[in-house]
Length: 160
Length: 160
DNA sequence: TATTGTTATACTCTATAACTATA
DNA sequence: TATAGTTATAGAGTATAACAATA
Image (cartoon, rainbow over all chains, first blue to last red; front, top):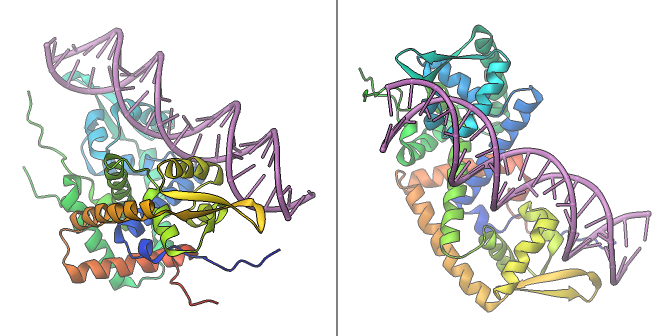
């Protein structure tokens, strides 16, 4: 057997590309979250759906879909799962009987608290090499880039 | 029609999560690169494979697969495509006839130059809201996180 | 006619495992 | 027996389009 200590790392060109590092890192973060969610018997979007419903008035499914960029037809099954586990409720909007208004249940709020802890722990491990200041810096930079690309990340302007 | 100016942005909780912003942003970066590559009639991994081969001595397919975290069986088709377009060459390693050594062709180097321009332009648009200092900061922070998670991002230590 | 939620279909990825030729 | 590359198969995931109820 030949000892091949050759190329053990990525080419300089890729390491030097912010876009490349960002995309790989983001994908890694996604995978790790999905993995931990699965271990906790939670669906891949449970956290974001519950977090959304926790902050807002009852939402129509189409609103949730648009906000989280999930296809409407796909969201149906995801909400079915959440509903079967008693974490959300669907009821018809009396003002427009085509709509289903979705709300979190008390049980859903408990689950959200659990998922928050999981996400916080992953994030802490993920950002381990950075101190508090650096984490804040990173977050600020990422958020500015995100806001520039996607209006959904815009800081809420007190409206109405 | 009712004017529903309600929730137009993501919940504060998700915007406040570095992990969430990073994962969405990284996925967005990935999609945009794939999209532009497709427009340029290039495969999704053409850039990374060519960049890798450009910096290194002829590589075995298994090395490429490990380095880019692509499954070996999946890499076959991707290399087939690159080879059919005359961008890379495969030849058997005389020292171990099981192996295929892969190299870039002159035509492949030209294509790499084209793809570099595309990636650079996407990156520039992507990081538009940041000035040069901030871009450098972001890159450094991301790279440190990446290096902590994945040895492939380690800075090359002059070896042999 | 347009829209909400839903279902069904087809298509693409991906992951796994089997196969060959070499070692 | 183990490994490099290849091929084949199955399962998951995704995108698209059709559908029923309501506006």
